[in-house]
Image (cartoon, rainbow, N blue to C red; front, side, top):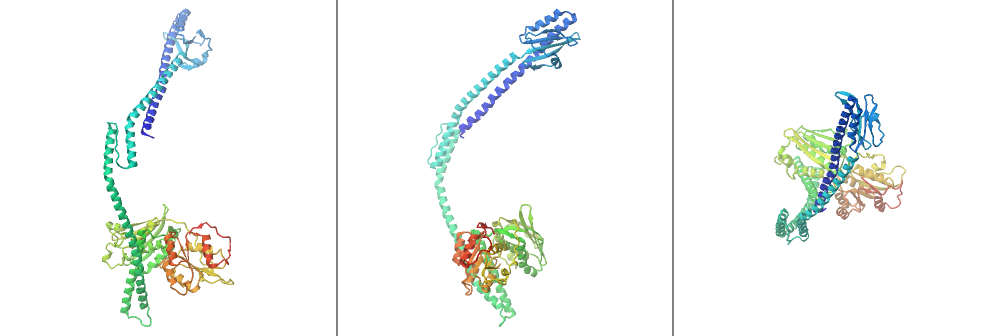
Length: 638
């Protein structure tokens, strides 16, 4: 709506209110005043007639009574007058219209009452403090109503006249006021369309004219700045391109360096372990200690390589997560079992207060959750005091999230240094001591938790200890998988009396994912499923059972799926076995990379049952019939 229309609408509303007030208020006020005047007139008339009638009754002179009634007859609106004695008997009457008068009803309501176009009033007849009955007088409302009608009509004409005249004046005034504003608007639109070289001319000497001059000055300044802005944009684009290339180069450098460093590290750690386990020509105690230092330093360097690579992937946005419902209780048990030897070395007591709790399920990536928890627990051991305590608590909160807390009894962290905890490579004062670390773990942990829509908080009291809390969305509990109800699933051997079946090896660390594939495979006869939660164990099972097909998750703890595939391709015994990738990474670049690495096919989570069988049937052939009705082809969520 234009400003002119808004102005006219506002004027119409205001004038409508004024006109309505005039039309409604003045007729009502006039009626009120006129009715009050009529009441006073009728009361005065009644009192005068009652006084004359009372004098006639006192003198017992009917002529005086008749004179009093005759005086009242001169008013043409007088409808009737009735004189009653003390007993209520009628003494005299004046009723020119022959109206039916209900004396009983009228005397019961002596007040001023309007009924049937007539107002009635009952007045006591008294003379010198003596009562002589009552006087009932009726008065017509015809003239009053006619006057009220004329007044209402006049008010309506006045209100309509004010409204029409006001609208006409508003139109003229709005045109006068809004014309320069509309000129300014057109100039502004032209400037928005053309961008520059606009002259704004407004024929107004008031505030609108001043606004137009200011706008013209602003346009000129903008025109002068356009070249600078374009130059800045060009510089920003160049800087952005350089930053993207630098970031890409950094990622490629870190990835290549990680690979290049892993190769010699593999030889260092491998030959170091061979020296440590040599039986024929054992090392001396001094040599064994030196080899131990080599292995320790190599493991530390390998951990640093992995953490730097993780940080690089997170910063570049190339780290993908497989978010699902995770049993946090199992993750906690695995992490505590890994940390227990470290705690025993420092005589630190591990206290798991989450034991026995139910429904500890979260939404997250199981492998990355374990990585985060291991980082917090290992830090809780490394930075704790000897014979201290490390407590782990886990509970569901009312806001639909799970809160996991790792509480240590170390020296604590100064309040002014807590914000520096999550900075990469910032170990605060730990560099001055003998505690090993890279200063990257906490930074990676926080970013991983944030990618899973969670948060990490820290509370610390110097001299008493610190509490690291992880808050994540709660997940839905899943039905626990019974891995013992099929003998061939564990043993890898057919049941008694069963014909030789085709073998499918599934390398997957997530029980929920394994349960789904188990249920899918169970619908086909003649397929034996064996599994492994780790890549290295899966390679050993492949050498032992020689499966027809291997399904392998990309994100595995320890050795990932791509690295495991490379090891398989180097093994003459199993390199011919087709390996199919199973991953939640649905990005085309990730799929292309997996296929280039040597995977025969790629199955995306959530698994579609029809696509799963389409891939599997290429290797098992059409002889494996369906044992039960074929599952729905809708996506099955893992």
